[in-house]
Image (cartoon, rainbow, N blue to C red; front, top):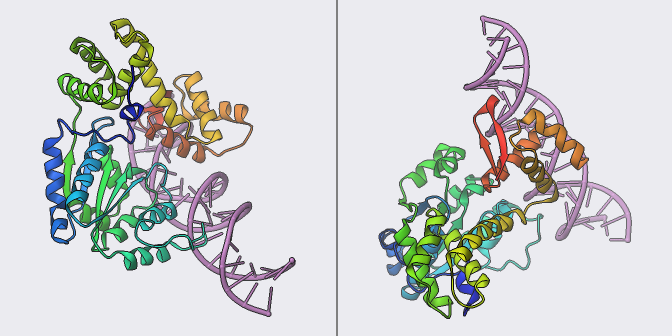
Length: 329
DNA sequence: AATCCACGGGAATAGCGGGACG
DNA sequence: CGTCCCGCTATTCCCGTGGATT
C-alpha cells in the first residue's frame, strides 16, 4: 500500500508542492531576495504551534533560493545542538574546515572567527527550535556576520525573546516575522491528498481524510503520521473509519515516543514518575524521584529537568509558582 | 502582614577531553 | 610520557521574586 516511505517522514520530507503556505512562503522569499543579487537577506523569525509547516516552509523556501542564487545553506536543529559549540560547528562545517577542531578544547570565539573568515558568499542558516538554544548572545554574534542570513524557527516566540537581552532582542525585532497558524480541516485534507499522491499506491476517499484531519486538530505531523499508520494497518488497501480511529492514537504515541527516546536516563525516570503519579507538586515529586532513581539531584536540577520535559511537550506544568502541578502527557 | 513554597537566573564548582610543553 | 592548563558541560549553591495561605 505504501509506495514511498520517506513521504511520511515528517521531520525531513519536503513535498514537491507546498500548499496553504503561499503567503508565508512569499514573505520568506521577499526576505531572502537580496541574496539573488549577492547581498545579505533579512533575518527572519518563523513562529507558530507545532505541526503547522514552519520547518517545511523554511526548507522549501531555502531550497527554492538555492536553485536561483549562488548561496550556501545549512539546516540546524537546536534541540539536538543546543550547546554553543555544536551549533557553531554545524554552521562552520559547510563553509570551512572542521576536521582539525577538537571537541571542547576549542573556544567559541575561535569557531566564530573561523566562520567569519570562511564565508565568501551569502549563507542562509535555518535554526530550528531556536528557543532551545543555551546562549542567545550567540545569535547576536552570528547576526553581526554580514554574509549570514538567519531563519529562526520557534513555537514560543515570547520565551525566546524573554531570554534575550535587549541588545539581541532589538536586532531581531526589526527582522521579518512570519506567523503560521493551525491548519483548518480542509487544508489538512489537501495536504494529506498530496501525500497520498506522492506516497501511496491507492487513493483514499475524502471522507476518510477528513476524519484523520479532524482528529489531528490542526497538526499536520499528527495527520500525516496517522495516514501512514492507517495505511500500514489496512492490509487490503482499504482505509475504514475503524482503522483511522485506531491509527490516530498510535501516531500520537509514536510522535511522543520519538521525543522521549532522546532523553537521558534520569530524565526518563522523572518522566515515568510524573506520568504514573499524576499531578504532582515539587514537594511531592522529589521524594518519589529520590526513591526511584537513587541519585540525589537537587530540587533546582529537577526543576531544570521538568522545564525541559515541559518544553518537549511531555509533561505539562499547570499553574504558577506555589500552585504548580506537573502532569504527564 | 507574615510565612511558606516554589520558580528560575546566575555564579561557583567539579569533571572531562585534549593540546602544549618539557 | 607525565604534567599543566584551557574550555566546555553538567550540577549544585545561592538568592531575589512572587503567588498562596493563614
